[in-house]
Length: 242
Image (cartoon, rainbow, N blue to C red):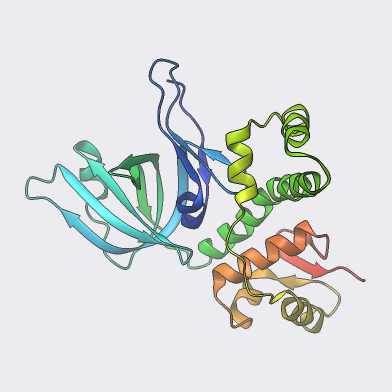
């Protein structure tokens, strides 16, 4: 099978997505389709290890990984165990691996994992995810607008014509995600108060606004999608003038 790229995702995106098992006859790997329409067979996540198990002969190891958006099990076997067995509970870790399912439970089959030493790395990853998710969220918003104006059959035909999306994909995309409490006005207010003319450092924003980091991450993604904020340079954002 062709080696797929490792897609940067949140654990929440994995858990709320739809899992499609591998098709060996067609040489297609298993993958998940997120509610934003991102297809991922291999993933790249940053999370903290909250639990660890290794068997006696060190042929198997498992971790529970938590990134604030959700928790997922990650497993490794044989030679890979030797490379990652020194990772411990509490370590902030970057993990690359394939999405698998066992007894209806999704997990990550670890290929590579290492401890993240830079405390700011996780914040920069959040900003990176916002930028990567944005185009997909725009497509979802457009699909929802189309669905309101068309009959179901017309919508299916138009979605396939414009975006190349089949019906199972559309069911995932239009299923949406969890609704977040509306903190958008508060975030915009803080952005305007902090901005002295040169924009606001995203890292500072995460430190100042006292709401869950994942909630803030989602809000910034929405605001960018709606055109209410913009990134004027790497890591610096500002609210647009109404």
